[in-house]
Length: 108
Image (cartoon, rainbow, N blue to C red; front, side):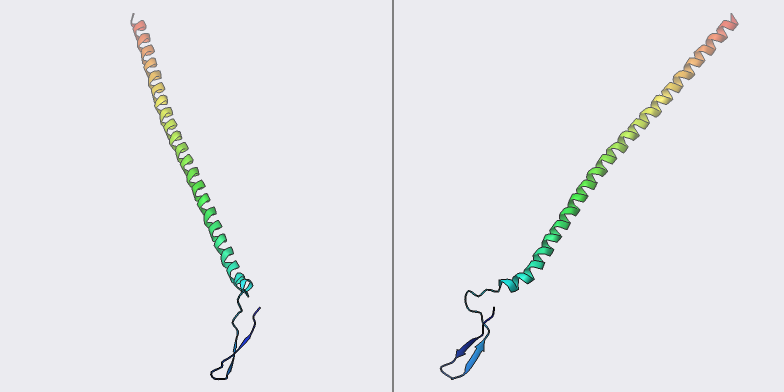
């Protein structure tokens, strides 16, 4: 609510009109209309940044777990390959022993 105040200058006799607000007449309504969108956009920006931060932390945790699983799978694969090679070598050795035993029994 703006009030026009008329001021009379005693020295010159002129009248001036002022649109100054009297004390106690606040412009909260006018200012809050401008400040509200700024506050809402600031809160919105903070929320978006917070969501993106949480998402990035969740993705990094998921990637770390995936990396651990891949390393474990690679280690298991290597162990399986080594065991398979050892088993094959043992079977070949057993076949050689049996073949040598058969050869000796035939020679006797």
